[in-house]
Image (cartoon, rainbow, N blue to C red; front, side):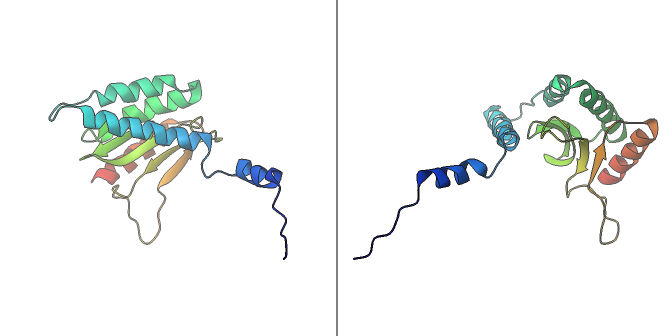
Length: 158
């Protein structure tokens, strides 16, 4: 009868600790999304939540540089596409039409990246040939950047 050696627990434990699928930040975003969905189902039919208030509160929690950009982007989106409704999406400020997120702001602190991101989902009408950008890295916002974002948002909802 042949005997096989069992693997030591150290090597399997080390492998399990090395990669478990999601980062702490990703798990946090999923938990925030679950809370958002749960809150939406608890509202009585026809009742509207103060989603803009929740977005502004989330923006107020951000670190200074991200907060300043998020406040400006919020103002630009609201001015250029008033039909988009502010809402939280995975704990990020987002702007939706008919419940579907068109664009969003992701702070650098959210996933511990070196830049913030302003992105668009597939409901945005930005198609341009067979390839086009759907997210933009932001380190700061200039007036020219705000103008470009405003034009992109207008195009996204056209």
